[in-house]
Length: 70
Image (cartoon, rainbow, N blue to C red; front, side, top):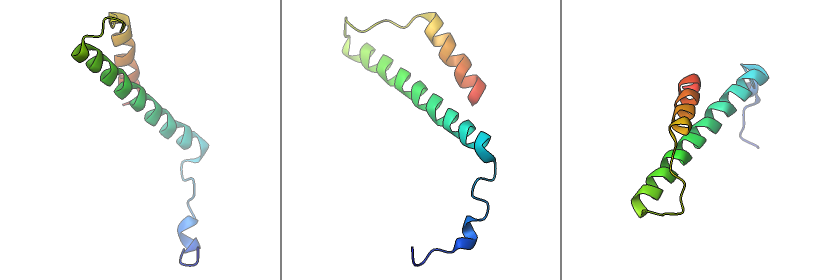
């Protein structure tokens, strides 16, 4: 890296390891939420009889997880 300035590396992890895990948790649960919504939408659109129907418990769990980390 011939053009990098090492002074920019000073606060490498300003929030430490807990900040890394908190950011990873946000990204993980955002992906899970998007995946849930897209799969349910696609199964409803295509009318796939083999796809499982969402239960209220699954929707409530996803809502609670999203509310906790958003």
